[in-house]
Image (tube, rainbow, N blue to C red):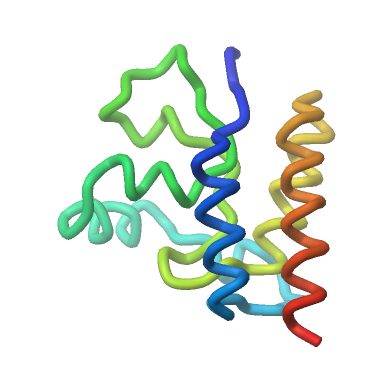
Length: 116
């Protein structure tokens, strides 16, 4: 799989955190992670590049206009979730994507600092 860091998503997440659009949740990401129907509803009102902004990874082996191209979600299309960043960091580490793991860790630190 040719997954790389989505630097535009990192920039977007930093802006959201700076603007206070965060959830410092400690639950399980599965409780907050948008499901397929949430994703489809979002895409009815937004462009694919906006959808991409909510994902730290890009799978360039998938078509640009497919949801499958975008990996490692970190928010619910409104806010950055602490548990989403933790999940992204852990999955990136397990799958060997050090750049995505590092970016998720940096964003997690920024979120936790902003939540104080």
